[in-house]
Amino acid sequence: MKTVRIIIEKSADFYDAYAENCAGVYGAGETVEAAKQNVLKGLELFVNTRDKKDLPDILRGEYTVVFQYDTQSLLKYYNNIFTNVALERITGINQKLLHHYSSGLKKPRPAQRKKIETALHRLGNELLTVQL
Image (cartoon, rainbow, N blue to C red; front, top):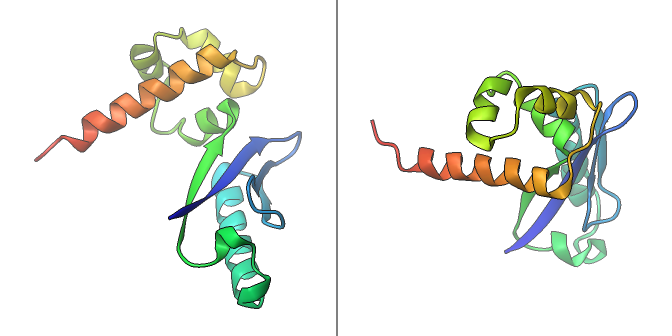
């Protein structure tokens, strides 16, 4: 199955969203959630208003959508779920630095971004094994 990769980034005034591997699919919003909804609606309109033969190959047939965030957008989007204290525990990155990343004061190096991503994936995998 093909994968449409949606990039979500913080700009000066809004959150921008666009398909990295499919030209013509864009969205924006005042929040990450609004940008996500806007780009998904744009993708739906893109697919439903074009003749199937005019669609990019990636949109012909079944496809999945994945979201790739810049660090600031990810931390802002999940700030009501993960406090900086919790993120420090799972990532090993101190709270002050996490705050700087989420506010846009600093941009993390690639190794720090990977550390955050790996910690969140590890947590997600652990949660998938939970049974109640």
